[in-house]
Image (cartoon, rainbow, N blue to C red; front, side):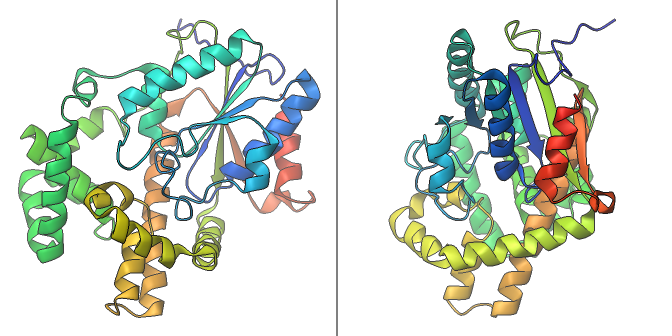
Length: 340
């Protein structure tokens, strides 16, 4: 029988994972969770981010960070910690984040891990496979290949997809045609390792995994995963895109292109920035601009949902139509965690 270092008792846990796809409400619910922990345990928890784009201090809008008031309400870490001039890796993050968590727990301070970057969460919680462990050594070579793939894609996306189809048919068939980010990632992997990414994802990303946390004996983990219906998620994604535009998404894209052109492979992963440049340069209409952002975000959310569906053990909090008896999403969320 497997011995999971997991606790489904809300009061007994000291590490709370809050995961879910983009636009499920992770950021806001992390503060609802933090308030509840404070009331029960009498100590404000540390909120630790594992969303890879929120790591960077220069990306202030497209990553949809917490508000200034939220950041001031609880201690935080790994929000704007790194610079695009010195990008981090999953390996570096896992080492540094583990040290921060262990220091917090030594002071009896609970920790909330919140984000949507499954690979970074996996690196922190379970460590690496041999291939993943080589990430740091491959960093510079990967950056060069990333730039090459961006140029190939920009010149002829059709040829790039044909190359992917020829060299990695599994990824080509599994990844949606409009999900350019994951198509590019598969090409980068092939050019870096001279073998397809698809079979590796079959064994790791798409397979079910049981996380025992035995490498973290002082952690008592409660993993809460947020889920929404496709209709609700699409609605929230559209509203998210409109809010980012109102907050200055296009201006941020212009700023990053001007001051961090060489780091485009990094900040370009943040949905809406490259699309903003296309719109600003008059290459696409406003309607198509919005459509591209919403579509790309939707495909990202589906990929995140697929990943988190493979992770066990966890408790799923599903926001659906049967919530009508509750005042709002927060009331339902509180009802769920208070029942544990």
